[in-house]
Image 1 (tube, rainbow, N blue to C red):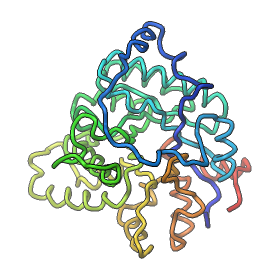
Image 2 (image 1 turned 90 degrees about the horizontal axis):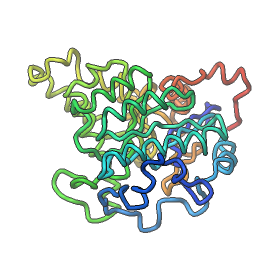
Image 3 (image 1 turned 45 degrees about the vertical axis):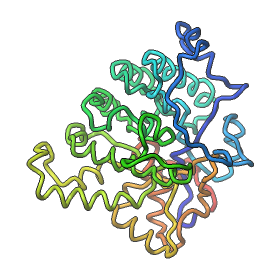
Image 4 (image 1 turned 135 degrees about the vertical axis):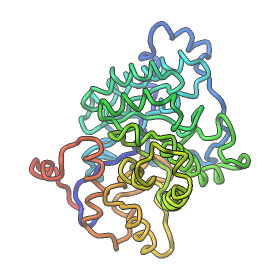
Length: 359
Protein backbone atom coordinates (compact mmCIF):
# COMPACT_ATOMS: atom_id res chain seq x y z
CA UNK A 1 0.00 0.00 0.00
CA UNK A 2 2.87 2.35 -0.70
CA UNK A 3 1.82 5.98 -0.82
CA UNK A 4 -1.59 5.58 0.81
CA UNK A 5 -2.91 4.98 4.30
CA UNK A 6 -6.67 5.08 3.90
CA UNK A 7 -8.81 2.47 2.18
CA UNK A 8 -12.43 2.06 1.13
CA UNK A 9 -13.26 -1.51 0.12
CA UNK A 10 -16.13 -1.44 -2.39
CA UNK A 11 -16.85 -5.18 -2.36
CA UNK A 12 -17.49 -7.05 0.90
CA UNK A 13 -19.83 -10.05 0.81
CA UNK A 14 -21.86 -10.66 3.97
CA UNK A 15 -23.89 -13.84 4.18
CA UNK A 16 -26.85 -14.91 6.25
CA UNK A 17 -26.23 -17.60 8.84
CA UNK A 18 -27.94 -19.63 11.54
CA UNK A 19 -27.12 -16.83 13.97
CA UNK A 20 -28.18 -14.07 11.55
CA UNK A 21 -30.91 -15.55 9.32
CA UNK A 22 -32.94 -13.63 6.78
CA UNK A 23 -36.35 -15.15 7.60
CA UNK A 24 -37.27 -12.85 10.54
CA UNK A 25 -36.96 -9.83 8.24
CA UNK A 26 -39.29 -11.11 5.53
CA UNK A 27 -42.59 -9.16 5.65
CA UNK A 28 -45.17 -11.15 7.64
CA UNK A 29 -47.57 -11.36 4.71
CA UNK A 30 -44.97 -13.23 2.63
CA UNK A 31 -43.55 -15.68 5.16
CA UNK A 32 -45.95 -18.46 4.28
CA UNK A 33 -45.26 -17.90 0.58
CA UNK A 34 -41.54 -18.18 1.36
CA UNK A 35 -42.13 -21.52 3.10
CA UNK A 36 -44.04 -22.71 0.03
CA UNK A 37 -41.09 -22.02 -2.25
CA UNK A 38 -42.34 -18.83 -3.87
CA UNK A 39 -38.86 -17.31 -3.71
CA UNK A 40 -37.65 -19.56 -6.52
CA UNK A 41 -35.71 -18.12 -9.44
CA UNK A 42 -34.09 -19.48 -12.60
CA UNK A 43 -31.07 -21.72 -12.22
CA UNK A 44 -27.80 -20.32 -13.45
CA UNK A 45 -25.79 -23.51 -13.71
CA UNK A 46 -22.25 -22.35 -12.95
CA UNK A 47 -20.57 -23.06 -9.63
CA UNK A 48 -16.94 -22.86 -8.62
CA UNK A 49 -15.91 -26.51 -8.13
CA UNK A 50 -13.71 -25.49 -5.19
CA UNK A 51 -16.28 -23.24 -3.54
CA UNK A 52 -16.64 -19.47 -3.73
CA UNK A 53 -15.33 -18.59 -0.26
CA UNK A 54 -11.75 -18.82 0.91
CA UNK A 55 -11.16 -21.69 3.30
CA UNK A 56 -9.53 -19.40 5.84
CA UNK A 57 -12.22 -16.70 5.94
CA UNK A 58 -15.95 -16.19 6.30
CA UNK A 59 -18.27 -13.20 6.25
CA UNK A 60 -21.26 -14.02 8.44
CA UNK A 61 -20.24 -12.31 11.70
CA UNK A 62 -19.83 -8.52 11.46
CA UNK A 63 -17.66 -8.30 14.57
CA UNK A 64 -15.31 -11.02 13.33
CA UNK A 65 -15.14 -9.48 9.85
CA UNK A 66 -14.23 -6.17 11.47
CA UNK A 67 -11.25 -7.89 13.10
CA UNK A 68 -10.25 -10.17 10.21
CA UNK A 69 -10.71 -7.66 7.42
CA UNK A 70 -11.36 -4.03 8.35
CA UNK A 71 -8.87 -3.85 11.21
CA UNK A 72 -6.29 -6.12 9.61
CA UNK A 73 -5.95 -4.03 6.46
CA UNK A 74 -6.79 -0.61 7.91
CA UNK A 75 -10.03 -0.30 5.95
CA UNK A 76 -12.01 2.84 6.76
CA UNK A 77 -15.24 1.63 5.15
CA UNK A 78 -16.49 -1.61 3.64
CA UNK A 79 -19.33 -1.51 1.12
CA UNK A 80 -21.61 -4.54 1.54
CA UNK A 81 -22.78 -6.51 -1.50
CA UNK A 82 -25.64 -8.51 0.07
CA UNK A 83 -27.06 -11.77 -1.34
CA UNK A 84 -30.26 -9.87 -2.13
CA UNK A 85 -28.65 -8.23 -5.15
CA UNK A 86 -30.21 -10.97 -7.32
CA UNK A 87 -33.84 -10.67 -6.17
CA UNK A 88 -34.89 -9.19 -9.53
CA UNK A 89 -34.69 -12.70 -10.97
CA UNK A 90 -37.28 -14.13 -8.56
CA UNK A 91 -40.12 -15.63 -10.61
CA UNK A 92 -42.85 -14.14 -8.42
CA UNK A 93 -42.57 -10.36 -8.67
CA UNK A 94 -44.22 -9.60 -5.32
CA UNK A 95 -42.01 -12.14 -3.58
CA UNK A 96 -38.96 -10.61 -5.22
CA UNK A 97 -39.84 -7.18 -3.85
CA UNK A 98 -40.56 -8.66 -0.40
CA UNK A 99 -37.13 -10.29 -0.42
CA UNK A 100 -35.54 -6.98 -1.42
CA UNK A 101 -37.16 -5.36 1.61
CA UNK A 102 -36.01 -8.22 3.83
CA UNK A 103 -32.38 -7.96 2.74
CA UNK A 104 -32.46 -4.23 3.40
CA UNK A 105 -33.83 -4.75 6.91
CA UNK A 106 -31.28 -7.52 7.49
CA UNK A 107 -28.39 -5.24 6.57
CA UNK A 108 -29.62 -2.49 8.89
CA UNK A 109 -30.14 -4.79 11.87
CA UNK A 110 -27.33 -7.31 11.50
CA UNK A 111 -24.47 -5.26 10.02
CA UNK A 112 -24.89 -1.50 9.86
CA UNK A 113 -25.93 -1.25 13.50
CA UNK A 114 -22.86 -3.19 14.61
CA UNK A 115 -20.12 -1.04 13.07
CA UNK A 116 -20.38 2.36 11.39
CA UNK A 117 -17.65 1.33 8.96
CA UNK A 118 -20.09 -0.94 7.14
CA UNK A 119 -21.96 0.73 4.29
CA UNK A 120 -25.11 -0.88 2.92
CA UNK A 121 -26.54 -1.40 -0.55
CA UNK A 122 -30.27 -0.96 -1.17
CA UNK A 123 -31.66 -4.13 -2.76
CA UNK A 124 -34.46 -3.62 -5.29
CA UNK A 125 -36.51 -5.75 -7.65
CA UNK A 126 -36.05 -4.13 -11.06
CA UNK A 127 -39.00 -6.18 -12.38
CA UNK A 128 -41.18 -4.08 -10.07
CA UNK A 129 -40.00 -0.49 -10.75
CA UNK A 130 -42.74 1.21 -8.71
CA UNK A 131 -41.93 -0.79 -5.59
CA UNK A 132 -38.20 -0.45 -6.30
CA UNK A 133 -38.53 3.34 -6.19
CA UNK A 134 -40.42 3.10 -2.90
CA UNK A 135 -37.64 0.98 -1.38
CA UNK A 136 -34.97 3.38 -2.63
CA UNK A 137 -36.75 6.25 -0.88
CA UNK A 138 -37.39 4.17 2.23
CA UNK A 139 -33.87 2.83 2.76
CA UNK A 140 -31.69 5.12 0.66
CA UNK A 141 -32.02 7.96 3.15
CA UNK A 142 -30.29 5.95 5.88
CA UNK A 143 -26.82 7.50 6.38
CA UNK A 144 -25.06 4.15 5.92
CA UNK A 145 -26.97 3.09 2.80
CA UNK A 146 -24.73 4.31 -0.01
CA UNK A 147 -25.86 2.69 -3.27
CA UNK A 148 -28.58 0.69 -5.03
CA UNK A 149 -27.47 -2.82 -6.00
CA UNK A 150 -28.68 -5.15 -8.77
CA UNK A 151 -27.46 -8.23 -10.58
CA UNK A 152 -25.69 -8.13 -13.93
CA UNK A 153 -28.31 -10.55 -15.28
CA UNK A 154 -31.50 -8.67 -16.13
CA UNK A 155 -34.76 -9.01 -18.02
CA UNK A 156 -33.69 -6.17 -20.33
CA UNK A 157 -30.43 -4.30 -20.82
CA UNK A 158 -30.26 -1.46 -18.32
CA UNK A 159 -30.65 1.17 -21.02
CA UNK A 160 -34.32 0.14 -21.36
CA UNK A 161 -36.76 2.85 -20.37
CA UNK A 162 -38.54 0.55 -17.93
CA UNK A 163 -35.66 1.26 -15.55
CA UNK A 164 -35.75 5.06 -15.86
CA UNK A 165 -37.88 5.59 -12.69
CA UNK A 166 -35.22 3.69 -10.72
CA UNK A 167 -32.45 5.86 -12.17
CA UNK A 168 -34.45 8.98 -11.37
CA UNK A 169 -34.76 7.90 -7.73
CA UNK A 170 -31.04 7.12 -7.55
CA UNK A 171 -30.19 10.53 -8.98
CA UNK A 172 -32.61 12.28 -6.62
CA UNK A 173 -31.04 10.70 -3.53
CA UNK A 174 -27.47 10.80 -4.85
CA UNK A 175 -27.15 7.01 -4.74
CA UNK A 176 -24.98 5.22 -7.31
CA UNK A 177 -26.60 2.39 -9.27
CA UNK A 178 -24.32 -0.62 -8.83
CA UNK A 179 -24.12 -3.86 -10.83
CA UNK A 180 -22.65 -7.04 -9.42
CA UNK A 181 -22.21 -10.38 -11.23
CA UNK A 182 -23.22 -13.79 -10.03
CA UNK A 183 -26.38 -14.72 -11.87
CA UNK A 184 -25.39 -14.22 -15.51
CA UNK A 185 -26.86 -17.00 -17.62
CA UNK A 186 -30.01 -17.41 -15.53
CA UNK A 187 -32.41 -16.08 -18.16
CA UNK A 188 -30.43 -16.75 -21.33
CA UNK A 189 -26.91 -17.57 -22.43
CA UNK A 190 -24.29 -15.41 -20.73
CA UNK A 191 -22.65 -14.94 -24.14
CA UNK A 192 -24.29 -13.85 -27.37
CA UNK A 193 -23.34 -17.02 -29.24
CA UNK A 194 -23.98 -19.83 -26.79
CA UNK A 195 -23.62 -21.09 -23.24
CA UNK A 196 -20.21 -21.66 -21.63
CA UNK A 197 -19.53 -25.22 -20.49
CA UNK A 198 -17.68 -24.48 -17.25
CA UNK A 199 -17.38 -21.98 -14.40
CA UNK A 200 -13.91 -21.12 -15.72
CA UNK A 201 -15.41 -20.01 -19.06
CA UNK A 202 -18.37 -18.28 -17.46
CA UNK A 203 -16.31 -16.31 -14.94
CA UNK A 204 -13.82 -15.18 -17.59
CA UNK A 205 -16.67 -13.89 -19.75
CA UNK A 206 -18.38 -11.73 -17.11
CA UNK A 207 -17.09 -8.49 -18.71
CA UNK A 208 -19.31 -9.26 -21.71
CA UNK A 209 -22.33 -8.52 -19.53
CA UNK A 210 -20.98 -5.19 -18.37
CA UNK A 211 -19.95 -4.19 -21.86
CA UNK A 212 -23.51 -4.83 -23.08
CA UNK A 213 -25.07 -2.81 -20.25
CA UNK A 214 -22.69 0.14 -20.64
CA UNK A 215 -23.28 0.29 -24.39
CA UNK A 216 -27.05 0.10 -23.81
CA UNK A 217 -27.12 2.75 -21.10
CA UNK A 218 -25.01 5.08 -23.22
CA UNK A 219 -26.83 4.66 -26.53
CA UNK A 220 -30.31 4.61 -24.98
CA UNK A 221 -29.59 7.94 -23.31
CA UNK A 222 -29.47 7.00 -19.60
CA UNK A 223 -26.42 9.12 -18.93
CA UNK A 224 -27.76 12.02 -20.98
CA UNK A 225 -31.14 11.89 -19.22
CA UNK A 226 -29.66 11.51 -15.72
CA UNK A 227 -26.43 13.51 -15.61
CA UNK A 228 -26.23 13.16 -11.84
CA UNK A 229 -26.40 9.35 -11.97
CA UNK A 230 -23.29 7.33 -11.22
CA UNK A 231 -23.05 3.66 -12.23
CA UNK A 232 -20.68 1.30 -10.40
CA UNK A 233 -19.49 -1.87 -12.12
CA UNK A 234 -18.35 -4.28 -9.42
CA UNK A 235 -16.24 -7.36 -10.15
CA UNK A 236 -16.22 -6.93 -13.90
CA UNK A 237 -12.60 -6.16 -14.64
CA UNK A 238 -11.10 -3.00 -16.08
CA UNK A 239 -9.30 -3.39 -19.42
CA UNK A 240 -12.41 -4.21 -21.49
CA UNK A 241 -13.61 -0.63 -21.03
CA UNK A 242 -10.92 0.71 -23.35
CA UNK A 243 -12.15 -1.23 -26.38
CA UNK A 244 -15.72 -0.22 -25.60
CA UNK A 245 -14.87 3.49 -25.38
CA UNK A 246 -12.91 3.46 -28.62
CA UNK A 247 -15.53 1.52 -30.56
CA UNK A 248 -18.41 3.67 -29.32
CA UNK A 249 -16.61 6.89 -30.25
CA UNK A 250 -15.66 5.54 -33.65
CA UNK A 251 -19.22 4.47 -34.47
CA UNK A 252 -20.66 7.71 -33.08
CA UNK A 253 -18.96 9.64 -35.87
CA UNK A 254 -21.11 7.94 -38.49
CA UNK A 255 -24.20 6.96 -36.48
CA UNK A 256 -24.79 9.92 -34.19
CA UNK A 257 -28.03 10.76 -36.03
CA UNK A 258 -29.55 7.59 -34.52
CA UNK A 259 -28.95 8.89 -30.99
CA UNK A 260 -29.85 12.60 -31.15
CA UNK A 261 -29.98 12.80 -27.34
CA UNK A 262 -26.19 12.34 -27.15
CA UNK A 263 -24.66 15.81 -27.13
CA UNK A 264 -21.08 14.65 -26.62
CA UNK A 265 -18.96 11.61 -27.37
CA UNK A 266 -20.05 8.37 -25.68
CA UNK A 267 -16.68 8.09 -23.95
CA UNK A 268 -17.25 11.43 -22.24
CA UNK A 269 -20.51 10.27 -20.68
CA UNK A 270 -18.95 7.01 -19.54
CA UNK A 271 -15.80 8.50 -18.05
CA UNK A 272 -17.91 11.07 -16.23
CA UNK A 273 -20.56 8.70 -14.87
CA UNK A 274 -19.22 5.13 -14.71
CA UNK A 275 -16.96 3.78 -11.99
CA UNK A 276 -15.22 0.40 -11.90
CA UNK A 277 -13.84 -1.63 -9.01
CA UNK A 278 -10.43 -3.24 -9.14
CA UNK A 279 -11.31 -6.79 -8.25
CA UNK A 280 -10.70 -8.87 -10.34
CA UNK A 281 -7.80 -6.81 -11.65
CA UNK A 282 -6.10 -7.89 -14.86
CA UNK A 283 -2.51 -9.06 -14.34
CA UNK A 284 -0.42 -8.63 -17.52
CA UNK A 285 3.10 -10.02 -17.56
CA UNK A 286 4.42 -6.50 -17.98
CA UNK A 287 3.02 -4.35 -15.13
CA UNK A 288 3.57 -1.24 -17.21
CA UNK A 289 0.79 -2.37 -19.53
CA UNK A 290 -1.69 -2.16 -16.66
CA UNK A 291 -0.41 1.32 -15.84
CA UNK A 292 -1.06 2.31 -19.44
CA UNK A 293 -4.62 0.98 -19.25
CA UNK A 294 -5.17 2.96 -16.04
CA UNK A 295 -3.95 6.12 -17.75
CA UNK A 296 -6.21 5.63 -20.75
CA UNK A 297 -9.37 5.06 -18.70
CA UNK A 298 -8.51 7.95 -16.36
CA UNK A 299 -8.24 5.71 -13.33
CA UNK A 300 -7.52 8.72 -11.14
CA UNK A 301 -11.29 9.32 -11.22
CA UNK A 302 -12.90 6.11 -12.52
CA UNK A 303 -11.36 3.25 -10.51
CA UNK A 304 -12.10 2.26 -6.89
CA UNK A 305 -10.45 -0.44 -4.80
CA UNK A 306 -12.32 -3.67 -4.03
CA UNK A 307 -11.12 -6.83 -2.30
CA UNK A 308 -14.07 -9.22 -2.87
CA UNK A 309 -13.71 -10.47 0.71
CA UNK A 310 -14.03 -13.38 1.51
CA UNK A 311 -14.15 -14.93 -1.97
CA UNK A 312 -11.58 -17.15 -3.64
CA UNK A 313 -10.17 -14.36 -5.81
CA UNK A 314 -9.75 -11.93 -2.89
CA UNK A 315 -7.28 -9.10 -3.52
CA UNK A 316 -4.96 -8.14 -0.67
CA UNK A 317 -4.60 -4.32 -0.71
CA UNK A 318 -0.95 -4.70 0.28
CA UNK A 319 -0.09 -6.65 -2.86
CA UNK A 320 -2.67 -5.98 -5.55
CA UNK A 321 -1.08 -3.11 -7.48
CA UNK A 322 2.22 -2.87 -9.38
CA UNK A 323 4.87 -0.90 -7.51
CA UNK A 324 5.22 1.40 -10.49
CA UNK A 325 1.91 3.16 -9.78
CA UNK A 326 2.34 6.60 -8.25
CA UNK A 327 1.35 7.30 -4.66
CA UNK A 328 -1.05 9.97 -5.92
CA UNK A 329 -2.88 7.47 -8.13
CA UNK A 330 -2.99 4.90 -5.34
CA UNK A 331 -4.53 7.46 -3.01
CA UNK A 332 -7.24 8.12 -5.55
CA UNK A 333 -7.98 4.42 -6.11
CA UNK A 334 -7.76 3.29 -2.50
CA UNK A 335 -9.84 6.09 -1.00
CA UNK A 336 -10.58 9.38 -2.75
CA UNK A 337 -12.58 8.10 -5.74
CA UNK A 338 -14.93 6.04 -3.58
CA UNK A 339 -15.19 8.80 -0.95
CA UNK A 340 -16.37 11.20 -3.65
CA UNK A 341 -18.70 8.58 -5.14
CA UNK A 342 -20.39 7.75 -1.84
CA UNK A 343 -20.25 11.17 -0.19
CA UNK A 344 -17.86 10.03 2.56
CA UNK A 345 -15.44 12.14 4.63
CA UNK A 346 -12.51 13.45 2.64
CA UNK A 347 -8.99 12.17 3.11
CA UNK A 348 -8.03 15.39 4.90
CA UNK A 349 -10.89 15.00 7.36
CA UNK A 350 -10.14 11.33 8.02
CA UNK A 351 -6.46 12.03 8.61
CA UNK A 352 -7.33 14.88 10.95
CA UNK A 353 -9.50 12.43 12.91
CA UNK A 354 -6.54 10.08 13.18
CA UNK A 355 -7.80 7.67 10.54
CA UNK A 356 -4.40 6.92 9.07
CA UNK A 357 -2.96 3.41 9.25
CA UNK A 358 0.55 2.26 8.56
CA UNK A 359 1.45 0.39 5.39
